[in-house]
Amino acid sequence: MPGLPFPTLPRPPEVTRRGRLSERAAGDLDAILAILPEDADQTLLARLPQSERWRRLHAGPRPAGGAVRSATLANARDTRAVLGVLPRRAGAFEILALAGRMLKEADSREPERLALVAPARAGADAGADALGALLSAALAHAFELPAFRKPSPTRRRIRRIELVDAARLDLPYIEAAASANNLARFLTALPPNVLDARSYRRFIVALAREHRLAVRWLDERALRRLGAGAFLAVASGNAERTAGIAHVRYRPGARRRGPPDVALVGKGVLFDTGGTNLKPHRAMLDMHTDMAGSAVALATLAALSRLRAPLAADAWIAVTENSIGPRAYRPQEVVRAANGTTIQVIHTDAEGRMVLADTLALAGRTDPRLMIDFGTLTGTCVYALTERMSGVFTNRPRLAQTLLAAGRASGERVWNFPLDSDYDSDLESKVADILQCAPEAKGDHILAARFLSRFVPEGVPWAHLDLSSALRPGGLGDILTDVTGFGVRYALELILRTRVLDELKALR
Image 1 (tube, rainbow, N blue to C red):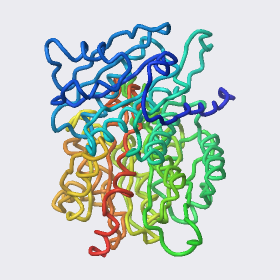
Image 2 (image 1 turned 180 degrees about the vertical axis):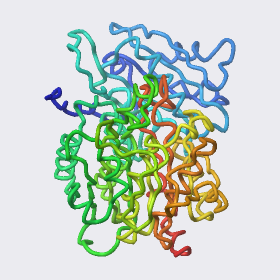
Image 3 (image 1 turned 180 degrees about the horizontal axis):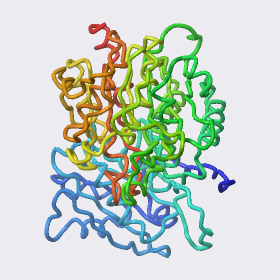
């Protein structure tokens, strides 16, 4: 049955800089958003148009950190003035969350043109951080997720963003990160009859062409030759033989040979019925989003290319469905993965670790300096953390603090779970090398990570992100949609702004 047409990505708004916002310029804007530190005095508002109105917003009962207040400026356009108050010692997540609330407050005007300003004392980094958060929120809010209803003739969207006093802002990085987050959300939100394996493959090839990336598609025949029995077991129930693994390569400049610095591995289960162990209605309803990890890996690689990052990176995108049918794999089957490990199947709804097992094993053959996988893997991680944070695991304990720090700095928070070897006793099989999962669900996020670790070559440093934050009602931080794109900002922070690759030199 033919699906709906594949939508095109919306164009981002135009972003410009200006040194100061005059009264005349304000009259052309639908909204002005300003973030002020909680302990700041009103002198920082003096440079804003109609500063007395801004002072009145800030006066009276002194606004607490995190507060958002708004008023209307006295001009022909009735420009909306939105003031956000930055809490003392606010971290990246708190700043982004405040920026998101400010965009939501401004949304009543359906602004097409807005200005962003973060008045700060000379030389203060807080102003640049706050302005960057506002811009990230605005770029996310301006992006429209795919919809298949008739467009509203009156609905307006953000088309122009003016940054006031933005000399300290790393604009290329913020725009690349926001664009990648939008891409991840766009793909994750697509209905399963639009984003199927065939259309996903075409999209990956087109994206690779746009970003001058090399791409190789390993179809089921190629995967059979490679011995990827775990992936193929999951794909066996699909109605069509279109599943596969995309290997996408970014190499800067003249660097064409040698192992990658980073390998990004993404779970791309396009729809998860649970297979033979069929999911109930509520658990299956949003399973078109079970490919969020693959969208994060692909979008992160696109951002690295856009930024011309001085490192070599690969993305391995595992694309299949987990369908019910006469050929679907069953509990108690024994399959052999690409690294030779035999797996006793326990529950067919634990398909994500099966798909990732072979993908990790194949990516590990390229000997990357660091391998990171992303997947909406377990419900137990959601129960442990809710959707506010995601779980992280690593086979190099010395990397744990760096992984946590990347979450704090990016505003995409993670929590490090144990990966101790004694958990393996819960995965001992009498007929195979390892159980796919334990019959009991307790600690399944930890057991899933222990399972995956068996498919990572011993010499390869590895981090596993269980994306419990990929979907959250009402959004998270500056992202106001249920689909959050969580993981892109985190991965870019980890790869480009921490010293993780330098740390790894001491660990190899």
